[in-house]
Every structure is written in structure tokens, then in C-alpha cells.
Length: 178
Image 1: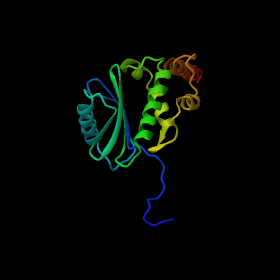
Image 2: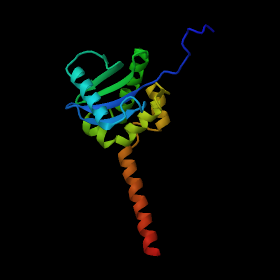
Image 3: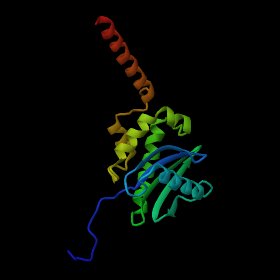
Image 4: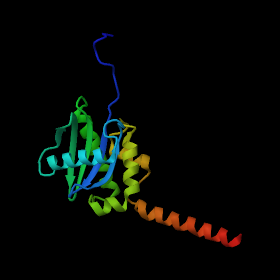
């Protein structure tokens, strides 16, 4: 191989975050610890991106040497950020996968309240799509299958509440028996 050609690498993401329509963080995952090491720097970066994109009618932005693809839905803004050299189409496929997967989990009701009510499912989806910054999956059906979520089942939050109640009953029963 020619020594001047770049080494092949995996497609990567620097950050994924979801903001509400006021620019407040609902979810964020930064995969490069040196990029924005403190919470203050992360929030400043998110604020700058939100201010640049919330009124724009585009799908891509370049800010602070990064490529950012984004999408809005009702009262949410979804962002996927990668390095300036990252393939914009791959970043967009991650964003679309995230949005479509969440749309299925939230039963086509992609808004702030539904997202917050189903945060554990949202985190599972993000973790199935991206692991340590490496893009693992870009097909929403595969993500939903891996998360083992079906739109016909109960929402994840109801299932989790039932599990917590059963666990609490068991603990109370054992504490009384002791």
C-alpha cells in the first residue's frame, strides 16, 4: 500500500444529542473525551449549534471543525456530530436510523414528553446504533430487533414499572420473613 494514503478506518461519531425547542439538553453522549471534557464546554457547544440551526431549514452544519447533521420534530432537535473528514451520508444515515427507531418506540409520537417518558428505550437505541463512537448499525429494523422492542407490546416504561413493583414486593416479602 502507498504510504501516503490514509489508513482505513471505521465510520465514527463524535457526539449525539437531543435538545428541546428551547435548546435544553434532553440526552447527550460524547464519544471523544478530549473534544469537550467538561459539562460547561459541552453545553456551550450545544448552545452554539442550537443557535445556528434552530431557525435554519438545512440538514447539515459545519461548526468548530465538525460536521453536524440534524433534524427537528415537533419540539425536539436531533443532532449527530462527526469530524470534518467524516462522511456526511454516514452521519445522516445514523441520524435517520435514530429518528426512525425512536419513532417506532414512541409510536410515531416523537415529542419531548414521550421521549422523557421512554428515556431508557431511547438510551438503548442510541447504544445499539453507536458504541464508543463507532457506528454499529444504520437500519432501524435491526436496531429495534436488537433492543427487542415491538410496537405491539407495552411501552418500555410500563414494562419497567411492572418489574420495579415486582422487585419491591419481593424485597418487602423477604424483609418481613426475616
